[in-house]
Image (tube, rainbow, N blue to C red):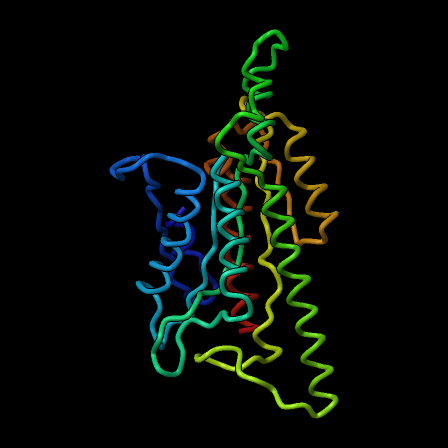
Length: 261
């Protein structure tokens, strides 16, 4: 993926792929829990901001999650947007690192929820596992995360309308934080979403992508779906049409966000 990105960028944009090793995975210590992984994801995004931003750099972040990781990526997006409500510029005038722009969200072969995963992995109705989801310690859900993103957007729009009304009435504009003041430019729309579905997925049933697409439309989120022909659960990015969809989406996200920044 890094090769087509680096060699085909129309404007010379540099791309860096950074992966997070959650607690309990790979070389990371600790025990993998939903609450812990959610904290890890936020710490990771803060680290990316601190590590890769510079006064001359316009940093954009695209979050990419595969399978159950799609729920982690979408949840991380919702939490990060809520944490930094309206404050999304990379470096303040004083050089302080501020939150980066989340320019896009990629959901590759996504699962909708723990419940759906158990049912798809254990389709036999006589097996007990499919009925145990209420007792799970983890309740990842892409739909819930998208609903949170939509609420963040609605709150942004309400505050934007309030600012317009205050400006029309001649009321003074109060600082939002010690870094900058509230302005209409601070209010960003949610990042566009690419739903990359593996057509021959042997793990996630086809109706999951249908449901997520329907949820995105219901919430009025900017969601694009691509069904990759002949792709199994882990093959969507390596198939030609899947790779093209990914690269085009990334280029479009970064170029569009750069124009409005």
